[in-house]
Structures are given as structure tokens and as C-alpha cells.
Length: 110
Figure (cartoon, one colour):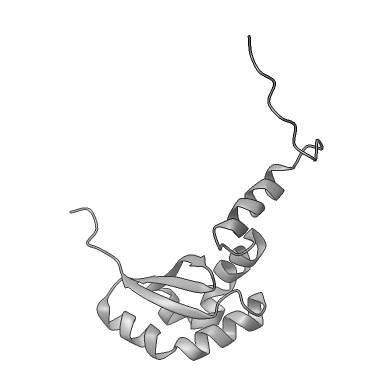
């Protein structure tokens, strides 16, 4: 005999987009639209020269992890943290990016 599963309070179906957004919120991730806006505006936020060497890897709990391809770029990005956070706020809204974390990419396949 199988036992019936208890019913949840809400029996309405939930869209995949809403379900993913809810899981993201629980994990401290920004809404997908905000992350997409950040990725799209990245060259505008940091400039084309930096964008060629630095990319947004993730955003969690307001901390934007930026991956760079060389330690020299890591220093430059860290130095520009306040400007990056301010420009990200202008493009994506307050609180999406409150600070940055910079990581240097490992060696590529050789």
C-alpha cells in the first residue's frame, strides 16, 4: 500500500521561471533579469579594455565574483571596486552588487 503524500497549501502550478527565481533567492542569487542586465552592461561598467580581460563569474548575496585572465588585471579591478559597484548600481539597481571578489583564471587546457 502506498501512502498519499501530504498536499501543499497551494495547488496552482508554478512556472519554471518562478521556481528557478525562488531557488535562486534561497541561494542568495539576484533575479535572472538583474544578472542578465549586469552581464549585458559589463563592458559599459568596466570599459572595453577591462572587459576584454575580466568577466562576471557569479553574484551571490551582493558579492560579484569577477574572473580575470592575469594577476595584473586582478589588481586593476580591485583598485576600481568602488567605481564598479557604483556603475553596477546605476545599471542594475541598488544592492545587486555591493562588493566584488576577484579571482584569476587557472591555466587553460594545454
